[in-house]
Image (tube, rainbow, N blue to C red):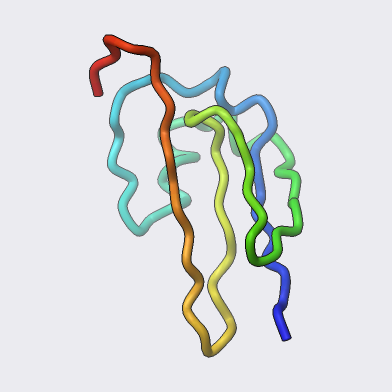
Length: 87
């Protein structure tokens, strides 16, 4: 049996973030130290099942809770950028 996972998004956070590559590491709450305005926005949880996908701005704050199942949770990320972009 598959248990859906909620992925939470902070609406509008892409407008607050900048393109600096800030390493928050394992301290995910560190994001709110860097961008305190994001902590004032209620996140929106979206149920995701195996095979689901989402398209969102790469600067949108998002995350999922801990995997509480005995199986691994696999995710894939693809970033689309205009020709000539540098990262």
